[in-house]
Length: 194
Image: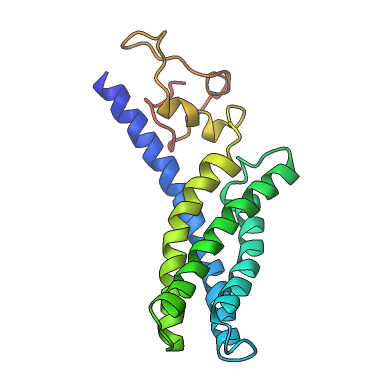
């Protein structure tokens, strides 16, 4: 029982950290796009519209983020209905953009901050808060297709679900796992025999 629980937790952590690493890489590039464009706009064409500059930078970074997350980070989880997936992604990013833009607007209009660098920093803090919200929303609402047909992810839902019909010491494997001759070392559970 303890060994099974430990294996499940280890598998969940492994899957989680692989997705977090990819999400972080995409997020890092999106962060550069967002902040680079915002900084340029704040100090150039949108000098007196810091919140709008943050909105434009975040919007362009969002389009990049959807493409990169769809085709790389969560490529095994993308939904068959692309329009629904994109609509959910836009909704979640709208909330994220609202958070980052809101931090900038709050600093400027509620706290009277006028220094552009401080307003820029307020937006960066907003991005960090929004990133945590986005990761969990992407993972569980947007890119959430089950992956039983993919051997490397076949234990995904089994890691977090308890099987009430199994007995201690008895392992129930999905058809995808049973058909594999070689065990994937990244999956939880004992090594395959064969």
